Length: 327
Image (cartoon, rainbow, N blue to C red; front, side):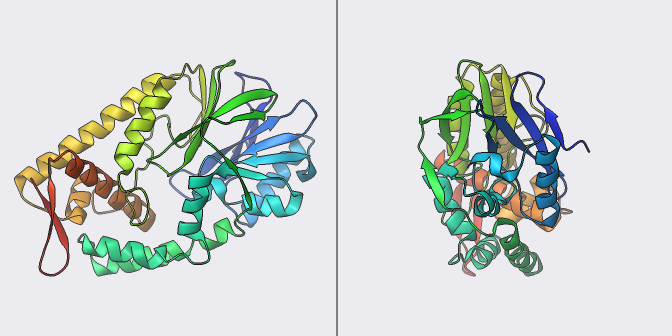
């Protein structure tokens, strides 16, 4: 795989493909060249010995070193985006910038006092997930610690704040749904957007309902898509897959995709009341690996929460302490 490439649509932006787990295989990091020879890095990727080496090789291939890093800017808190930022900060002293809300979520998910590796499996269990699956989720959640250690010291970015990156001015656009406090960066003069995982070509960003986080993530996501879709974008640089031009059309497609998913879930519950795990299996099948099962279960719960908000379904508590959903 070619690790580093200059984006042909514009000068001064390089995409660096950093390895991550299957099925996505790599995350897009972006390296923006400053007029003074320094660089801004967007989303350096997950941390392990392989990705550390990939960055050393990518910088060397461009005639750069870690000392040339002026700042590290994060779209959101997920390990495949935030992971190496604390390590890079230790090496360079460069500021790491992300939204206040995103940093709060990083602490909740990955901080020293985090209990998410027990909270999340218990939550899934109350929604019908079998015990053998919840135990796998418990072990799975513990495995992320090495990918994000150390967490960075963060200089906050506020919604609407202007940043100078790569010789251009970009405005921060904060949206939710995929990740609370997710930031995209829009350059109105060149009509480019660094959109992280807010809008992806070909695949739909995961929308997860998790206890202690955004209580209405699908609503947050759809409102964010409408806001992003109003921007005049010629070229979008996403966190996964390839840069693309049809940005506004893609926001419309994603909104339609979630409406279709809500309708399919409604039809399933009309057949008979069900718990979230049974609905998850109906929607996504029963052959998912642990990582994909977590995404599918939280995505199912996010859509069910939106159906509750719309007063299409209601959630009922059973005598055994588990929940089910009915029209």
